[in-house]
Image (cartoon, rainbow, N blue to C red; front, side, top):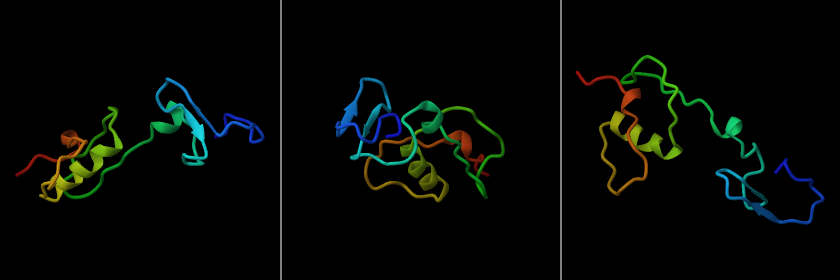
Amino acid sequence: VHHLSPDLAVPLVITLRDHSAWGRAFADHGKPSDADAHVPLVFWGRGIRAGRSDGRVATVDIAPTLARLLGLAPDAPVDGRVLDRALAAER
């Protein structure tokens, strides 16, 4: 949203690049840039492996990972994947 002048009479702009859409139909915070879209994700507590990984994950990966940590199985197909590298080895 901050990439365009507020008085510009364009309600929505979409480009062919990932994360490149501006308009009031979307969130009004942050920017559609890699620096803003790539943020840290921290897991902490029992069942979590100590360490750091610089790999990218998607928001949809959080629910399957937490479900595995809690010993739950989704009752419907999910888009995400379990982030095995974040989970401690089972004993």
